[in-house]
Image (cartoon, rainbow, N blue to C red; front, side):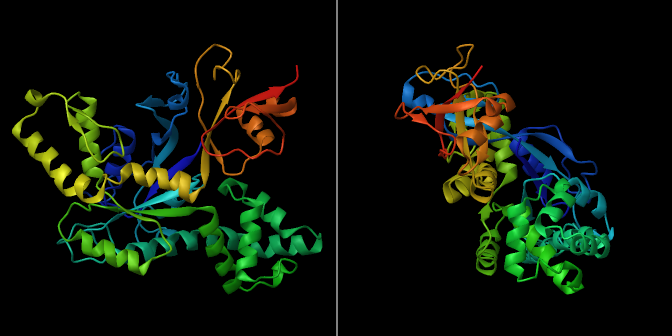
Length: 401
C-alpha cells in the first residue's frame, strides 16, 4: 500500500492535517513536540468510479464510494516534528528521520501564516518567513541521506570497484530499506555527472551532491501551505510560489477540513472531502458557534480557494508526485464482478505505464505465474502481457489452472 508521511517542524498543524485526512484520534496542541511516537492511520485518495459508466453500484472491498467518486485507501504517517539540526540528533530528529524510511512521498506541512518560528514556538503572525521552513527541511532530509550513504561509503565503494560490481545495482540493494529503485539511482548519477565506474574516487562533496539528488528523486515532496485562512497568509503564499517554482504548493486549512468532516460524521452537514461546498442537513442541530464556524469556512476557504486543500494535497502526492493510476481488476468483464458477484470490488493504486502482467502480479502472485492475457472493458478486446494500463481502466486477467 502507498505510504504518505506528514513531515515538517512542530506546531504547524501537522497533526491536525493528519486527523483531517484520517479522522484518527490523535493529540492536537500548539505545544512543541505534541507528537512523539509516529501515528499511523488510513487516508483516502479520490477518483471517478467506473460505476458511472455501467449504471450499477460498486461494492468496494476497501475504501468506499460516494456519488460515483471512489475513495481509495492509502497509509498515512504522522511523525515527530523537525527542528534545524535534526540530522545531528537535535530535537527528536534521529527518531523522526528513521520513521520516514518506508515512506513513498512526503507532504511537508508548513505554517503559511508565519506564526511559528524555526523551533516550533508560537510567535506573532507574519513575523516568521515560512520560506525558511522549505529550505531547512530540504537541508535536513538531504543531510540524512548523506549520513546514511557516507557511513560505509569507503568500504562499500572499494568493494564495488574491486569486485567489479555494478554500482547502480549494488546501491539499490544496499539501500532497499529506503524504497530506492535502480532507475532513481541511475538518474541521480546521470544528473550529478559522476562516474559510476570509480565510486571510490568520489569526494565528500560528490557524495553529498549525489545524496541530495537521490533524496529528491526517491522521496518526493509536496508543500501544504497550512493555515491559509489566517489573515495575511495569502501574501506569504504568493512569495513562496515565486521562490520555489519547482514545488507543488497547495493552500490549505486543515482545521477547516477537520471541522467539515466532523460535522458530516455527526450528521449535521453533507460534505464530500475535496468539494467546494457543503449542504446543511440539520439546521436545528447547529448552535450559534457552529453556524459561525461553517460560515467562516464557506466564505474564507471554500469560496476563496475552491476547497480546504487537504484532499487536494493527498491526491497530488499520489497522482502527481508518484504518478500513480487507479486500475480495477475483475473476474468477469461483462458484469464487472469478482468470483463472488461483487461489482468493482477492488481499486488498486499502481505506477503509471504498468504492464498487464506486472499488474497481474500486484493482484496476486499466482496470476503472474500462470498469466495468459487479459480483456479490457472499453473494447472487450484481448490484451497481452506488455499492454500498458491507463488510469481508471477495468480489466479481466486471464490465467491458466
